[in-house]
Length: 302
Image (cartoon, rainbow, N blue to C red; front, side):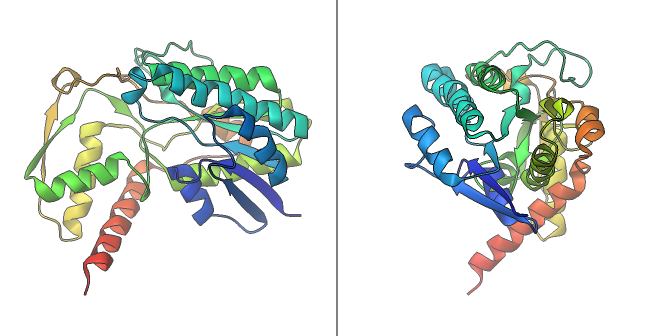
């Protein structure tokens, strides 16, 4: 029997990865604006109802972390209120909902990876809006899985890997923050995990252990500076010029929104309950860099 998944967020990294990575026996219906606009709550339920899905994945979000500081109401409407509306629609349809969330729900002050039951405490408008979304989903339906991830990258959209490759093409040296640590996570690995979780929710509808909050990031950890060094090293293997990384502190790179100093997430619960282990981050990052450079070379070829 085909598993039909409706997903919000047509152009987002995770949705693009899901559409490219659809496994046998799965159908993905990506719902775009204006049919479904998270900023317009009345569009959500009709669009999800029309999708006739077995599982709903809410991957769309307001992700402009710094801009959210000046648009907190919009961020809250999209990430908080709309997430709750999507979950209420799923409840009315009698299907589970998977909500994609973030490490930004934590303050980043712990000296170890965060577990699902650690106290939340967002330090930015974006983080507060994503936490509101988690709570709205949990209040709307018990048939939910909230998947927190971090440091997402892919060949699609705006992300750290693409930014570093662009900067490295123009500069000999790039300053990158070295006192924030986390777990780089490929959108393709996230897509694979979502498919696995969706299957479990569909196949075991009465199992409460499969529901709740789970952490989902690439295995291993590094700093933004360490991530950048890995990106530039791989790019050099593909013919790019060497680029030095100048390690700087968070204080040297001020942003409107505070970033968690510690974005590491402990993922043993996801492995134990859903049987999902995301791969080690280095190999996925190398593949992403190689693909982006190959695509760039294809565009430049006569």
